[in-house]
Image (cartoon, rainbow, N blue to C red; front, side):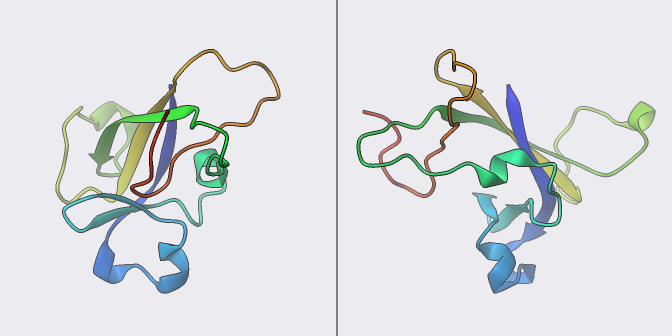
Amino acid sequence: VIALWGRRRHSASVSTDAREWAFEVGAGWLLDPSGYPGSMLQYASCPGPNEVSVLLGTQYLARKARPFQQRKRVLRPRARLGSWRFITRWGVPCDWQLTMQYGDGQDSR
């Protein structure tokens, strides 16, 4: 399991430049990892014409930024941070590229 994480923002509040890096998570909300270089999945490329995506999105979570001991595992509509969990479709050998399907294109063949 690997996560894409960043600031949770309403689509109207995201600049055109940041929208280039943001991921739609539903109901007018975006997950904006720009400004968080440690959120490595933002750099994953799209698969080429004869490739298939290795990463599969599973679950989106949103939380308010609080000290760790006070966090509860619930979705919060006013959460500032969010994460989108991904899994690999199969075992990935060392030094292979992780690719994910962006947009509504075909995810796998």
